[in-house]
Image (cartoon, rainbow, N blue to C red):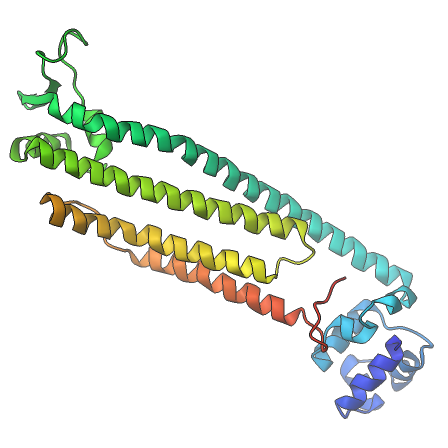
Length: 299
């Protein structure tokens, strides 16, 4: 079925006369008649207007196999091709950049995992071999022979395992008020949650990488695979956000040392809603790409 036949069929299905259609498109009735008889073809802006009027896809007008597109005005075709090439190039560049960021971020986080595990192994040794003297946390001289004149300040080491907002004197007070066992448990639990955070971020970045790789390599970003990736990213970000208050509760229950973990903030909830809503936008984009036969439009 040719373009003109498609146009005539859709117009009649909408119970619209040639005069009515011509008025809506802002052309003469003779122009509509020539389109339907194959004597001439509308310009691209008129084709888009026809799609808007009939609430249909371009594919519904020019047929499924797109064979009729070759009979359209060459200038119109070239404009459409150049526009698509420009947009596809921009999308490919942006997708490649984001894909690389996800890949590099994932590698950096994976490299951090062995260091975190090593730190977890060293924490019991460090905590059991320090003492508080003159409001300073130092290594016990009887256990360490010569390291910086037998006195090493380890505020940075200890604070690094705790919340960054804890002041040095609070760390000192923590050593004075709690047993070494409690402190070791506190730090180890914190490191476990940090490890879980990093693993979740690695998985999130891997999905981001896959998402933008799909966008880069496919004609359309609106695919069901991409919808699934966005939903998974949203679920993982939810898990990442709720870990913080959960860790604070576990600190209090298991160790008895209060944690200054922040509650879930409103901005975090908004971020989740925005990302999750993207999945519905992509799902909607997938649906509107279908023509009247339920097939995906593929230019």
